[in-house]
Length: 323
Ligand code: ADP
Ligand code: MG
Image (tube, rainbow, N blue to C red):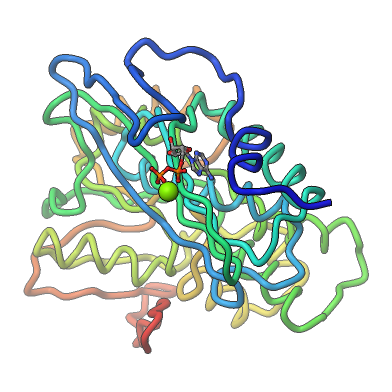
């Protein structure tokens, strides 16, 4: 069964969500209207997901909706912002109601989990592509910028790195490992990354700089270093790699995945030594690990990797759409 543009919006996207008193107008007029609370800053981020670039044709509508929201939330998390509102621009080849039902259910599931309200969007016909903008709040002067790292700060990452890339590798190569549970776990890590929203908010008052790992640790940390005009020493022995990767893949594979392939959507952040006590207190509120992997150095010292205490040479790859 098919339905028209207005039926799509009404049936699938105009849903009752928990009220928000800052929202003056949501879906249904020419634009949404939001009141920004006093002494707050609006954080705005947009991400587009395009078929064959960000997801494969056979991705389920459930996973696609989840990932669209998760990658956007991850950007706000990296600023320490509290996510509040979103707008959805969706282009699809036809109005398949089964697809729309599954997509929108999953979409509102994750939105509701993080208390985010859909306040508008656009609906078009064409090759499948989804653009989400997300809006969050933070108090003035508390945003976690890429440009605030300082010499002597410690460098941390949340969670484990490389599992999403392992999942992508399994999907792409139709390479299946014997243990079905492990295989499904890794594929799920790729399709359903957890945005570190609450961790980002908690880090807002104590970290100096942050970024989310979407393109690979070396590439993303590289952005902090260039924005902050700093160097870094990284101890590769400290990179958090799960036992699952160590037991099932080669050292070469998982290190490359952890360093050069992104989509883990973990946070990489820097923190002054004087704030480590505070970090240790915060850590207790989260089940995810926070691992120190190195420190910030003066820019003249460059970006160095050490393995078993020896300096190693590397080529920073990362993901670039035009390269
Ligand atoms: P306009 O023609 O003024 O762009 P539309 O007909 O595109 O208005 O949209 C009507 C209302 O529905 C607007 O409030 C718009 O924000 C909202 N809307 C359209 N598509 C979506 C969508 N996919 N998700 C949420 N809201 C949507
Ligand atoms: Mg429109």
